[in-house]
Image (cartoon, rainbow, N blue to C red):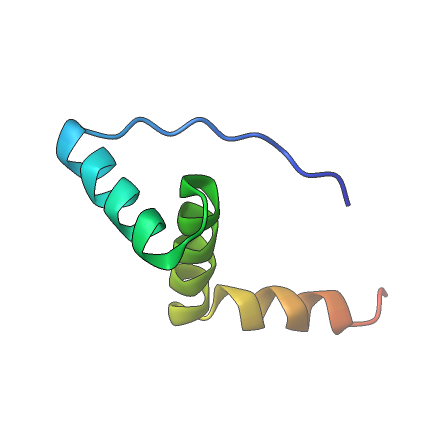
Length: 59
């Protein structure tokens, strides 16, 4: 699967928070956003729903 680029606009305060989190975790800002997105998707059951749809046989 090819990865896609996504552009995100953050306020100055949001960017400061992002940098702080990234530095604290020792990972890049894009990885912080990717992980946060995946955690949110999991919290609203989108991950499970997507996997279940992929497992259904085609009719």
